[in-house]
Length: 315
Image (cartoon, rainbow, N blue to C red):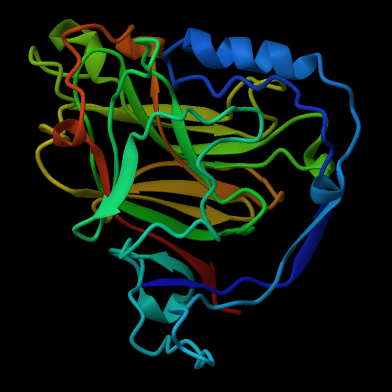
């Protein structure tokens, strides 16, 4: 079941797609295909379409279409952030992935053209995104985002997931904004970035290209306005493609704290007040190198997400 409860907010989006560099924490690089897309986007005229002019997120709850009326969401037994005090939080977003809901998730970022090749689905109660070549034989990025559909400022954001492995794979879980109010920079919080393709000597993975580490980074002024306020790599965590783990962040007005399976891993004293949307993606490159014939394709090597949830702090 998917439930979304958000405070009514309205924002104006600038349609000019300015190149962003959602680069890795310490990865130092980008995949070629999305760099080309960004370069192309910069050449487009800055004319706002009616669809881009105003976007509103109203208080809402998604229920099956068969139900004529939606009953108020029962949050009395709602799950709390793992390892946190339930009394401190109110659940505002919960996707347990019983189905793929296009009312909440886009299948690409605003500057991307989505590939016609299908490499994601929801089945067995999980979202799955897997490495796949397109009709031209190229690996392509897949980004799922709540841009234009769900935002939040502050709170706790959590995902339970199992990561893919192999050369080139770069799964991530981000908070991001590209709204006009955030210009000239685009703040972001990188909750998870993993790079299995580096191999054993890279510190990111084992000899079988299975991820054993990941990183988190805070960009208060975005990549364009860097440097990062803080970045941290968590190593020697075991095979992150073998089991599900919880990746979370607590975003407070003056502090951002990252968690792994409920354990505090790293914190940054930083103020970031622009509302953000969530991104789940499987990209390629950076510290993971380029995918090749050794990179396992298909559902058997999926970035599997059990749920994505968000909470607001109780007043």
